[in-house]
Length: 400
Image (cartoon, helix red, strand yellow):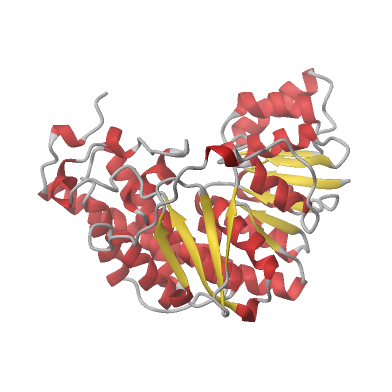
């Protein structure tokens, strides 16, 4: 029986993880959950799964949830809140495996502390490895515990690498759908609307990651993530556009052999793989091979999608530059979604923030978080300047 903590239990990865637990009750048990701000779902989950610890975002929500659980006769469930609540969930002594799925740097400290406590961790949070990958992977090596990727691309790489030794790998190919603007001329980017940018051709995801997919920044984050997870330099991590999203990633070996991983576009499969590694167990998640008609590939347009170029530069520098990349992107995407800046301003905000960030390597999670805060402050100032000096076309804003 594997005993699980879920950081981000009310999000899409959290719900998919709970679906896996429900399908395999003899294999998995939920010990602790970090539910964020969704109090209604947190209460329903606490009643259904009866975890030992559940954490919410705010103190007042924790008070409400505790009272509701007491009324339901579940006062034995420990209720926590905030960042320290997340840490309590991730480091509970009865937990074997932590699913890290809190969006952004909010889950960074809890993920690091889980690794430090000797837990095996399944990572569905790109930001953890983008902002603090050097620290997290170093700690995992010290603890001799695996960091198992849940992101479909890195999960695919992990699976393919079982076909050879790491020193036999020539390069890794991360596939990208190309997003909604793959075939849109660059001349039309100035008028891209929020609604258009949120219309991803393959996946249904949260707003930030969907915009990141439209700018290809999401793929840039994955490059950094791959560098940290597989201890490879950026020049060995390649991005290739594959509109069908059938192949999730490929690994090329020194002898010219290439292994590719294909599967259904369902996050339950990489979650199941991470939870059961090094085993493989039977599931009903089947890919319809008979429907496979064509596979297209072509290189990404770095000029059209400068966020990918910026990510490679940050991957090479590491440290504060990769922290700033993530922080500036989060600020810029939020501003675009609010209608404060245009789509083309997103890479401008990120590039200027990177220019204003000194090149150094924070030595602790607290320093990473401090650097993240400073980068966000810089990015907000840049956004405010752009918002004051530019007029955004009404067509470029989401119609409310």
